[in-house]
Figure 1 (tube, helix red, strand yellow):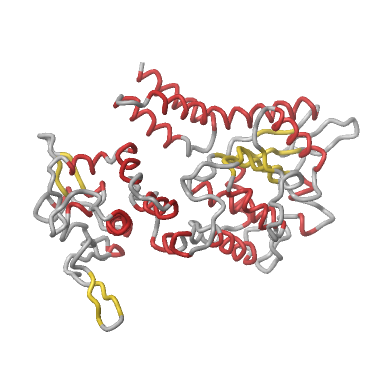
Figure 2 (tube, rainbow, N blue to C red):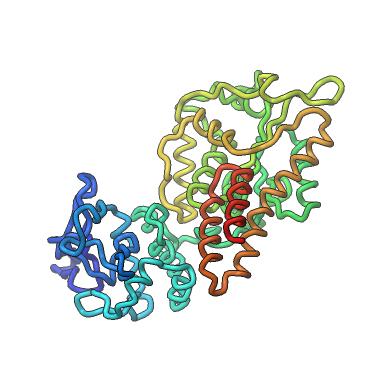
Length: 425
């Protein structure tokens, strides 16, 4: 990685080609070299700044801090610097006031970079007029380096490619819930679930009720766009849809690397990718048992409905996933080559519910759980946003809630939230 990217002095025109120069501060991140061999303080990311005991901040650069206080080089650090350069190109001003060498000229700005509050970031982004440019920049100047956009994903962003996207990362969703089920399976149950969720006031995408008129898109493409626009995913699973003894294409045990693309598996694979990106906030599996002669339903697991999914990677699913991610400007997959067994296991690892016993009561209970999952987080965020003005403790609370909203289940969110509220009071 370069590690000394800044607004000037790094690019040389050679003939008709731009050459990146000034590589004396470069570091090999694959060898875990230390970052900061050469730094320009106005272009380093927040993780490159540390707080001293006297309350001042310093860049973790060579000769400025001890070797133990420096951090290893990571590509995400260059992506922040790229964001700083793009900010100058978009606005005509640097992200932080700086000298011609790229060092901050206002002493307190280093502390502002270290803290890098959402309110400060929002104020800076407001200066960028173009929506797509502003979104790309917001992903580049993200405080958490693990969540900062990668180079490959940046190159796939709609601002670069010119391709339209259903929903940009960080934008609000159009649907509360995406109802995922295998076409032609459990239709009566899914229809009742859809009806109850809608009656509860949720915006629900279900392919039999929702479409994108005059779009010219295939059923698969419409579903993927609906998924990208949704906050939560409900995965309906049953013997009929996952372990069908008659229809091999509906049996996850029968899939092979060369099988045709399984649309249900594709949607689950896509949902997990969106969850990694923070676009899908939660996944709720609904496990349907076998229907008994008296109209009751058995337990999904005890009845043997859950398949022993094939431990293979279906190439066509991975190819379709990459195509849809690229189409939506989301770059390549975070996870490469997920097996059928791994995808099923990850979906089931989320807190969900069973449709067993009396179907009417079970559906009502399941829908209340889904409704709670959606509203616990949304109402909490809304309340904290109202209270956020100038209160440092509340700011920390908001950041923590944003963090725990990525947890695997609602129960863990509630437990942590209660502890936070206790400490806040």
